[in-house]
Image (tube, helix red, strand yellow):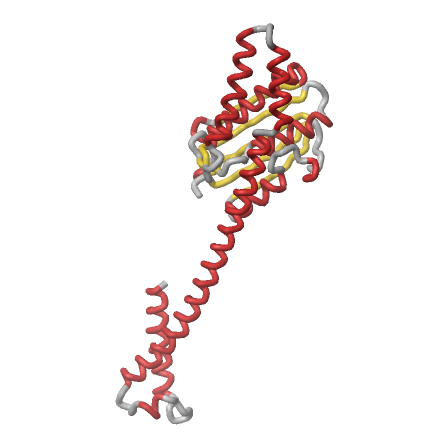
Length: 276
């Protein structure tokens, strides 16, 4: 910016100096009251200084405005993150979710010991992730993927043959840093609304792909038809609209959210630039 201002000011000063010298007989220029006609360089410096002063004033105001806008955006994003964090803790420590999980464990006591161990391990790993990442602004996508896989393992044990789950993630996408609570609200919606519209069994697919230029794509699909989410019915999660708002604040020009309802499947696809 300094080089541009300097270059433009010098060019502008030269053009205005030539104009002043060429038309000084027809126009009254303030330099003639201060300098003699022989002080060409003084006139040039005076005009260049005027150009530089106005340019610096313009860029200074623009820089201040951009800085204020950026600070406001960051403040809004931080506020949204804190609200989402509180809602995530409520969702992850939701008595309703824990009540159903513990009831499932109690129902399995006396049955296959390995099945029960796997269920308890999945619940413990999910809760451990919830506690360890509650203060993190960014988390590796692989960690959230594993946590949601454990979440779905508990739900699978609860619904048994009424639920089928398929999870896949590109190894290259596991290290991508994303804001927490990206996959969970989509999975919650898939479970909640899929149970209303899908024939048995409800099928849920999670696919995470690494795209070019550092972008990742998260695809959450469920059998059934699209139901417009109602924020007042949210089951403890941040909700789809809340997630859209957070992504808009954190990735204003580098994300997309697309919804498909085709051939008995509902799919929500999110693309974000994980390098930001």
